[in-house]
Length: 241
Image (cartoon, rainbow, N blue to C red; front, side):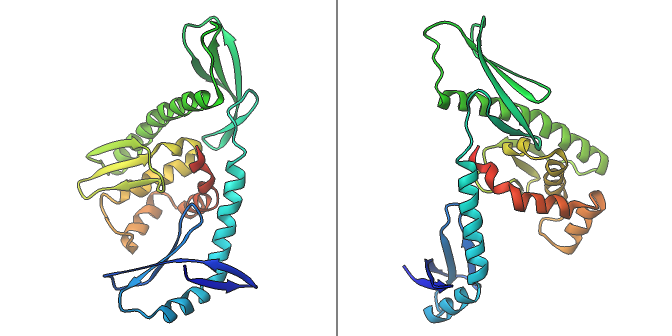
């Protein structure tokens, strides 16, 4: 693989050439540097471009490494904490007289009641699946309510709203007016969740990120840039859920 040097340290990058007009540099969530360029562009020119962006690339790689360390500490055990609408819920896991696993929230605690039957053995991985299932259920309720609120208030009504698993993005809006939202939005503060909802609803009127689009976002949410920055700084670590 091609390499570049920054502060005496060697970094590799993957180079892809295809039929396109511009050169793009992307850092994947796994920490891979990918440079995509037109077929005719000289390799030396690409290297010079990468070297010119070296400080930015290395900063992003360090940020990804930090996120990996943070996310690696997430546990699904009694007393552990998980994200929920910008706060931390304490997991309170115990056996009880229930036929099947039961999960419910009270204030800052998430109670997980397990059946006492000996054959009911729950590993941490099994508990994780049940907690994620609960989070997805909450996400569906909250996101649909917030979409309803903003769509009716600003007359931006989508054709359909789907809450789904999205590996790299928070939301999307199709040309048919269908909006997809990432269930992990239930982990972020409510005002940040609202920003993503507003962002996608505004795409119903302006499909690109044009000045008119951002003007509409700002009209609805004057301080949207703070929410956007929160996602940029904190969003990456939430994709470990």
